[in-house]
Image 1 (cartoon, helix red, strand yellow):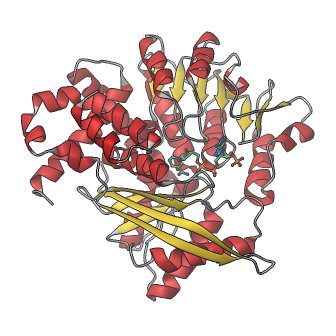
Image 2: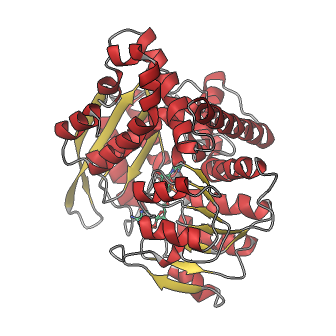
Length: 450
Ligand code: NDP
């Protein structure tokens, strides 16, 4: 283990997910540091692994029965070398400092890869929106924003959605920000279309992960047409990855949530996808209900402590993990390979454990795209939303989609070029880490020790 990594662990010994994310980047960028001694002289690793600012705050709110609850709110402002902090808010009971620091750290490099001027941040709360009424969610969002508003701004820090934060939550958060600041600015992205949102923003992360898979396949003169795909999750990213896979001729056979998954051998079609969108976005039900509605599908409950997740143990060509971090363990990665999967494009952030990543990288047939490259489409279109807000204009669906495709293509090219330059052709992990890292570090050095 490098001295730099030891220091990171010593400083915050309990931040397991943060260590995992840092360790992967440090391994990839070692040859870059060896080649550019000035990066070491600038003590760049200590600086880039320390957030510029961490905000932690109390979020009190009253439920519908009048009982008072207290959650913890966070915003990690990780790095602003190439632009204002940008990254989502996550509302999920598992949220803690380690998870948000890992997400903020990854976000820095992801945002750099998009070529847009955005620094990295992430935030959220251990609040669980599941089972809460709309009014409870609204009161929570208002209380959360009553503190967050003083730390963000359209030139400072621009949050967006993530797990548990969709159009409904962004609406409540924006409403409160506007009231407190008395200004209508593009301070959040993922807004609804009729008050400043961008076309294609809801679709962007899922579509982007599929475009990235297409780019990888095109290096072998192949496409998604006719491919069988495993998709995990059933939220925003999973839904739009599925839509785009279907449009490009692929067949999606699974959806999941934190209770279990459905396997539909016939494949998802437009009606079934509409049903999932209704079920998850409006009714806020469980994916189990899919198998009740479509008897050809089989529902399997999943215990997170099992040795392997049966979701990843089906014959397929491609996998689009789109739920959460570390959802593919080493056994799952082995099962994917055993079942013929040779394309993995990560819609989720860090969904594969390091041992699983190594299995993918050791298999020469595997085309493996890490989240920070494959799911950058979401933040890229958030960047486009910011641009449209500043210019007070609205681009058409075709225009935004064309720009998204172009950005995903350019991220693919940057990854391929950086991996080749540093002697690991085809390794998208090294490619993404190196390309993002160099851009941010060069900016940090230009700006002095701040
Ligand atoms: P949603 O909240 O819309 O959906 C999340 C999905 O993942 C749900 O199906 C949820 O199931 C499932 N899930 C969440 N936690 C777990 C868990 N611990 N175990 C199993 N399943 C779980 O979130 P998104 O679709 O927006 O986000 C999915 C992933 O994509 C995340 O990793 C996020 O960081 C990443 N991402 C999202 C972007 C975006 O633009 N939205 C941008 C880039 C990355 P349940 O309903 O049971 O909770």
